[in-house]
Length: 279
Image (cartoon, rainbow, N blue to C red; front, side, top):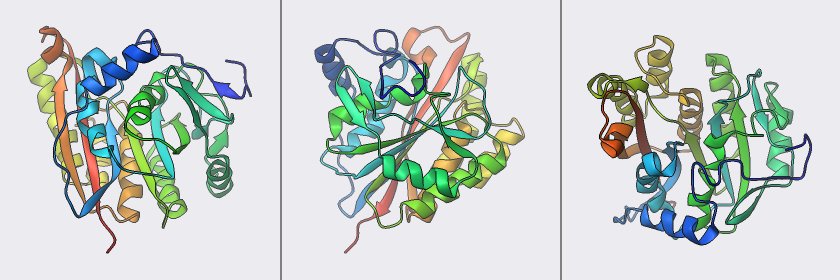
């Protein structure tokens, strides 16, 4: 992708998820776990993994199923950068992100607002060119919802200052708007399954307790591991400001549960943050 190009083309189609739109839609639908949602609450945020769909798709689907029949003006996705190193955060400067299911229009007004208010934010294709962690969330959203705009954020560094500054800014920016916040993260990488499960339990319990401060501390102390730990803390910080009051773990597993090889696994977790419905 050339710097400044208008639409960001899919980079993970055919590898992380199917490139054929019919197969992709059917795959996503098969991963959406059906269950009853609370009658007096709405999802305010989602934490979802970003591995290939065969590994983490059902875990992501367990959370995304809660978004069926919901409507949001803007979806904010905060993802880590796996392939490019840079300071602060970047927001894609083009018109849209695309997947085999079509284009998702970027909310240019919110992009400009966040860049104006947050010194660590800049408009750039850095971190967006080949990054899968943000892209793989989009087909789930395209299947369960329609009519939303996107604010695509990639975090180049996950220092405490960057994480908390972003979370606070998102909380301020979206008060009173129908917004959904998504954190993209996997958990521990390449430990034997029994060790991975112990490490991942720390992150999972911090998320379940809606405790971004605790998760940040555990990440800094290397007690917890998550490649998108910073995005997760930022999103939970913002969700608190926006009035979410509880987090439900939707699903967790390891790659070993899929492949049967438990010698070296990656951990996955999904969660839903709920907010009381306005009377």
